[in-house]
Image 1 (spheres, rainbow, N blue to C red):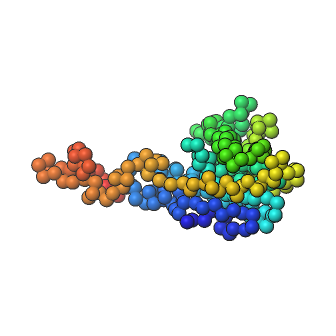
Image 2 (image 1 turned 90 degrees about the vertical axis):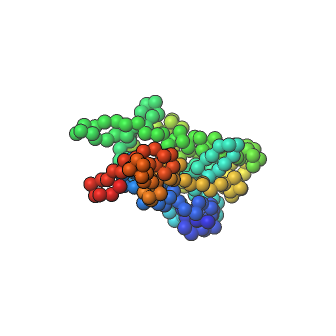
Length: 278
């Protein structure tokens, strides 16, 4: 099995099994196999770019956690935890168990400038045609709330009573990102990766939770962890038949004196791009 994002497993960094081949590798393989003229090629390229950025951010956060807390004896860290329970899935980037609570970290590689509106919506600030424009982006805190809902159900199934406090944390792995409009009353914490240690130290000094040390529960969560079955084809809606060699996708029909689809029999026209490739 491929190891977790933390390459070396220390005493308090749990080894969380992951898929043997990561999503970025799957998408790269798909991109290599796609014909240059495929209509979804740009979609896969954009998807691969986002996935690589996200994985790089997660590795950066995991590195900081390993560097500062690899030998800690009062906390536990699990990276890449995918909990499956009751027909729902929670993909938790980083779960940090400190004595008083569980920190649920959502690593988010964002554009350079982001604004949070009064309503709590996230907006990307960019330039188009020489003018500043705003474009809505997904709220990572809302995504983390769903993860925490599944996590709470799993903890109840483990018999945690009362539940340890769960703290939603959005971590920005790129320190150069500027986020405007964040307010603590939104119900989650927003932390840059270069401020992550200070934030954890603040939470680490809290007294142990009423249910006992929250970190003790993290290891027990592994029984609910199921590595993702990654499928780049399904992710971007591509039929695997579409990447077969041209000679396997079309056949010559002597009666038609032209080409037909090898799968459905429809008449086809063989087109070539500027490089002479079909």
